[in-house]
Amino acid sequence: SNTFSGLFEGQNVITLQQVDSTNEYLKKELSKSRPLTEGTVILAVHQFAGRGQQGATWFSEPGRNLTFSLLLMPTFLNPKHQFRLTVAISLAIARWLEQLLSVGVKIKWPNDIYVGDRKIGGVLIENILKGKAWKSAIVGIGINVNQTDFPAAIRRRITSIKDYLREDSDIGELLTALCRSIEREYLALKQGQTEAQLASYKQRLYRLGERHPFLVSGVKVDGILLDITETGRLQIDFGGHVADFDIKEVAFVI
Ligand code: BTN
Image 1 (cartoon, rainbow, N blue to C red):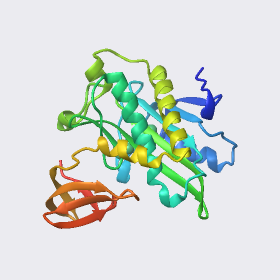
Image 2 (cartoon, protein in one colour):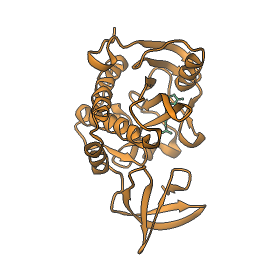
Image 3 (cartoon, rainbow, N blue to C red):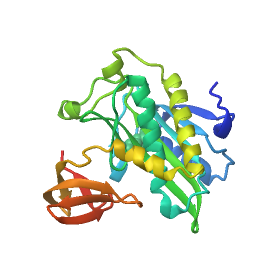
Image 4 (cartoon, protein in one colour):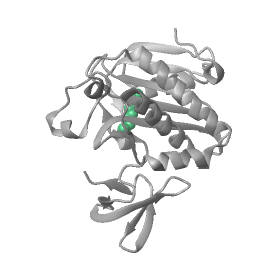
């Protein structure tokens, strides 16, 4: 019974008890040329083969976290401006979490969601283009909610909503609130509030202006995270020599 006014009106939430990956599921449904409406959500109770960025795996304890994919049709955006969608989505998650947890939330470029030095969620956006035009975007979101048990090796770099609220949260209620936040930012994006959104995104940028070790072409180099370019490239100052990179070319060393 998730209904939304406005853009995602009559939002369709499909809950799956078990699925490999909600992104994959949504992609398959779309390829069957089933007419799904913008704002459709595929929510997984147990996602057993979740996918992360850069071919990573996204692990989530069954039934304890938010793992879903949202269908958007950002046909108003030129595909070369797809970073703007990344900005709007990351910002929507950050703002929703800040309200919920009453803490500052950071965005680790391009779209990892952090509280302090710990990752609380991630985003995997897959764009489906038709020639040079945008057909749809599959926005996959994973947020650690009620899970507090994580592999020891990563425990100090990972957190969840429960770490802050100290009690279990209702997944459905969180989904509704998060989708409202996304709807708000998506509408703002549609109305062309790109610059304001990019500024708010940068305000929350993890390690902005700080010296940090980066991995560039397999080599570890210290640099200062200077800025994000308009197309979403990470700009780093290596002691006077400034260069920018895409996600395949650079990594944060943690
Ligand atoms: C990352 O931080 O690497 C991105 C993680 C994205 C995980 C979500 S969970 C729901 C959706 N389905 C997937 O297979 N992945 C995304």
